[in-house]
Amino acid sequence: MRNLSLASTSLLRIEDAEEFETVAGTTFDVDNECLITVSETPSETETVFQVWKIDAKTPAKLVARATCATSRKNSVFPSAQLVSVTFLAEARNVCIVSAGGDIATGSVDDESTVSELEIVGSVESGVECAEWSPDNDVLALVAGDGNLLLMTKEYEIVYEAPLRTQEKGEDQSVNVGWGSKETQFHGSLGKTAAAAATEQAAAAARGGSSPDDDGRARVSWRGDGAFFVVSSLDPHAIPPQTVESYTHFRRVLRVFDRAGSLQNTSEPVPGLEQGLAWKPSGSVIVSSQRFGFPGGGQGVASRHDVVFFERNGLRHGEFGLREYWVPKPDTKRHWSYRVKEFCWNADSTVLAAWIERDDGDAVQLWTMGNWHWYLKQEISAPSPDDGSTPRFNDVSWHPEQPLRIVTTSPAHIDDFCFTWDTCTSTQGPPDDTGSVAVVDGAALLMTPFRLQNCPPPESSYKIVRPPPRIDPPIHVSQAPNADALICLFPNARVELWWLQTGKRVPRTPQDPDIAEPSLIWKGEIPGDLIARQALLWNSEDTSDEWFIAL
Image (cartoon, rainbow, N blue to C red; front, side, top):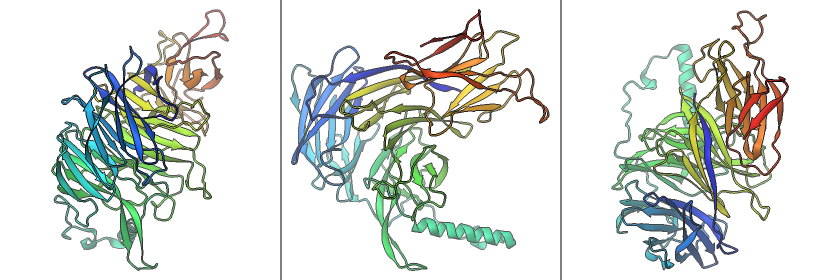
């Protein structure tokens, strides 16, 4: 029943950045407690990457640069030239992988001069994705020609082979027929259910990729570094049945060990998208699935799920996103948003979903309790000075501080630290209702435990804001001397709610509800405020007077 509350936030800028320089990615130097940020300035033939060191006490300092080849494949020039940036703690080096195929590395410890990073390797066909293993011993990357490469920390290639293969893997499950649905007695209703299941399996095999898929491969390591998973678009031939045969693309997940041996291949999932992240604890792999379009999952067009896979490639549950969307059949993008990336925090308790909307990007923070997924926080991209659409370029969790996340936008970096918080009523007896407020997206799940015991995710009643608002409050607190609470939103927007909790549990339909919440006031606190917490209390002189502290 915990909430995520914002404990601190800091805005970091690169003051000496050039006019066309874009902040592209961030990594962490944990030993020195600083951020290492990479900016890029692309041209038609080459891209200049500049490496900056930033900490809370000193301004950003340029420490290194690298000049790499520019790629124009699968991207709209001149953006998205940085594929990966990683600080290798043991070697005290930073490694940059560019979309053009160059791998640059070098030390960033000497701040007295701007060093030139060394190009230690090049992939002629370019690089679609790359990620170091958690122990920084193996670099896995997918080349532009569809090959999977594994490199040591000395950048020696130890494995290279085509990624897309018809093999299923060494640990792939094999069905020998015993105990299968086809050999079981079903009865009249069971036969219908079995036929429906067979039809659904056939439809899944014919399924394709989402229209909003960016086409790029993704790679993600398990927390212990023993396995990694690769998501790629594979051509798939449809045999002639009721329609003409044709070839289309669909997403496939493949699990490899750190030596490059294929272990498992995922089952067919229609509408599977590009987002990919392996939970550090190792239990599940996360992606997303679209519904309601030709080749997608069977369901309404408004359905959009976050889906989970086990290491063996089989599905293992899902939950639905709560995006307010508008169909856009006449544009390149079919919906008014898409899921761009996923990333887990260090202790596997929070899942970050990077949402790219038409009106700006957002990062949603989800947690799970009692097999229910709660939307706890939403971080919106800051508005650029030039008036363009707010976008993120990178989202990264701190490798050791589980509730610290850094978002990178083209102009600056935002560093957020969250904390676990339980919103309980603090009135003294006999007025204390024992109310607990749990944030879940646009809803507050309210339970007065003095009157009723509802195990989460159930609640006695809900306070729900109408759509299209889905962003959760950044902080919720209850008044210490009244049956009321305050919700704080970004830009110092607040809502005051009078709960009016009853004195007993309703026993019949004619009894009053256990609570009758009503909105007292909502608005924006004047002044250029950056508030992260809010307190509320009632005046002792009059019940109509309220005090707010931010």
